[in-house]
Image (cartoon, rainbow, N blue to C red; front, side, top):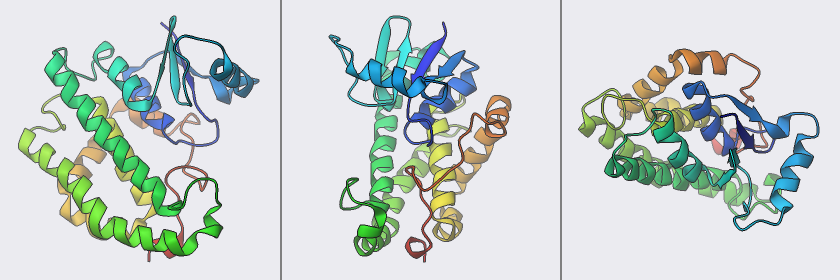
Length: 235
């Protein structure tokens, strides 16, 4: 099957978690909106009359299925590409972890847009600085501390034990993104999460992921995505 991934073409965003899974799996896929007339095709998909229309990107076309929401897409792809257990209990546990990642991604976005996406960053600098300080004091230790404990308690190289899963790929993206957006904070904080730092490095060393990161398919971090670097927020 050749998948079609629909997501905004200029940013990694939430679509990147799906791209990482597809790349690790060696799946055949098209990043539709990055092709000629791809944005128009994506908008047609969103506006088409359907019994199950997607609300917003990312969404994945798999045969006749159109699956939206990052965690939902990964829940679908995981067991089909060796990135999730075959047993239902294991699949639900991974989905639970991915939903927690989804919550963290929203909080990361809100560090630079605490008043909402309708305003430019420049219109909410002071609230963003306050939110970022709270994020690093309260929220990062809670989220990354949780994943560090899960990794340690699992006793394996990966979050759920001995096999790589799509949640490991997502946590790689979290660590990579926070290093870009908050290099000073992350340099200090990573001393307390050696397990997640090691997991990040193991994911980066996977042959398919290493090739992807070195390719033009990997969109660079920029100040239009979820992870944005503003010096005043990283002081």
